[in-house]
Figure: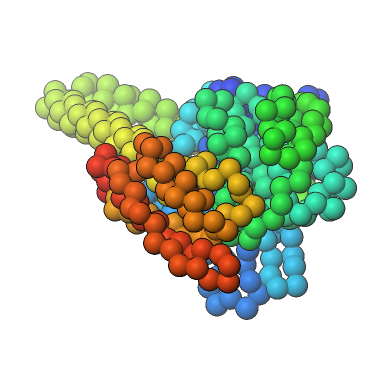
Length: 411
């Protein structure tokens, strides 16, 4: 099947085609992960909730387009005794409008849409698989012109996927992804960080960094082409794009243009046979034109609202993750005798930290550091009691006024 279909990737705002590809107008398209809503979910074998319900709930929670109905797609990554790990994804139509225009300009018909980094993992897998099988937790980071794609693995099983642009601090994004893996699948030691396409030496303090070399676009496209012949691989095409397959995008536009030409011819004929009829048609045309302008204005207004909403919800500077990071950075230097056992974070109100220490001085040193770190408005005196030669403590911190406002915006 793939021999009769072109394979292309949307990279840097342009279409890049697999060399020696078919001359067909049908194309399998690979898009950057930054355009895709995606997540790995574990589906227990004894769950009563369907895969579609679970997938819809997961992607709706992270979608920046709350009013748009998503077309879900998923594939099985690994089957285990207690269930299976699924890759769930969707390409919002609002995030693919420019891609559709570019395909129309090339007069191409999309038969399937894949995620570009999936092809990169397929290319890198011979170098990854042996090391992954002996590792508890590893990370693979691939850089392309559209940004970074990050995958967290437990053994050979992928558990977290994320993407971010060049402007984002890579260490910060790595820590966030590892925290997601810990929340969903438990604590495990990070042993290896595999990188491709960039210098990952800055990550060496986290774990061993292994550069597997550059992965070329042609290698990725070839891997995407091979996936086309496989069963049950993802298809990110929005529902409206799939409907167009019944009658291709090019034919649909051609029919529309013929209809316009026919309408113009009908107007000319109407003018020849009756001025009143022509005036009526011209009036209807102006009314329809005004409706189209109004529709375009409303669409632009809605898009602006969505962009403002994305900017509003993308500010995590004062959230729970930043609060936990601040607490972690201010732990006492004598780390072996000081343990934080729990966090209790209340948006816009307070944060409570509980733990154990060998000496009371370590607790008060910790409290003093939190008082001067600038993140919390007030840090209360710790309450502690001795239990089995250790001091069990609790410290309460109140959030700053400007953090309260951001927290309310995130609710």
